[in-house]
Amino acid sequence: MSAASLPAPGARRRFRHALLAWYDVHGRDLPWRKTSDPYHILVSEIMLQQTQVDRVLPKYAEWLKKYPSFEALASARISDVTSTWRPLGYNIRPRRLHAIAREAVARYDGQLPSDQETLLSFKGIGAYTAGAIRSFAFGQRAAILDTNVARVLFRVFVGHGDPKAHAMRKQLWAISDIVLPRKRVFDFNQALMDLGATVCSARSPQCAVCPMARICRSRRVD
Image 1 (tube, rainbow, N blue to C red):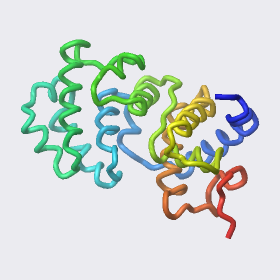
Image 2 (image 1 turned 135 degrees about the horizontal axis):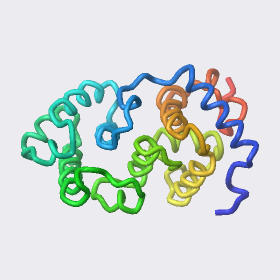
Image 3 (image 1 turned 135 degrees about the vertical axis):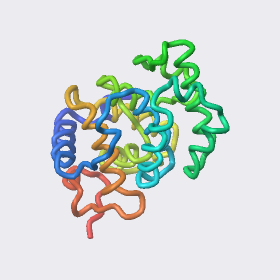
Image 4 (image 1 turned 120 degrees about the vertical axis):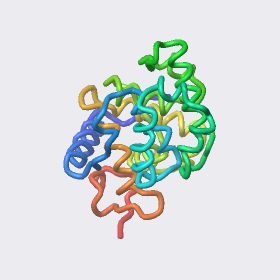
């Protein structure tokens, strides 16, 4: 990836400043943002895959009350686990959570490791989830790229091409990494997701109130 295809230092600084200033005012109050427990972070991230926040909120609380730790989840029967998961759907997800819990208990004393290579060795933890765990639970400078983040970065910094193409996906990962600040990593990554979910939405982006309006390469001019 050439340096020319990545945001220049000035653009990175403007993006960081605008995003964090916006988040300080408009960031959503979500329970998984009030914890650094790796297990809690993992549960929230798995639940949020392809599922709206308002559907996850009650299930997240119910799940942690019933399975408050990796040990509690690992010792549960898989039939109970999948039953508790309903009605979130995509029922491979509770099975993966259960398998991750059992592996964490068996190999890592009921804890999640903090390094990317080991996290990626768990079946069900991909690059995005590993980055989320590292930044949200362990405070590491780790990039993330989910659907909302990819849409924001593509629209602001690229503006043309196929955002789903393999080469573009690699470029967006590189952009996510290079714009990530060294401080306030937790807030920055959460802000990226909030901006994509609430302002830079897929079908009805609110460009008039977007903090990136002045620098966005895809801004709609009405």
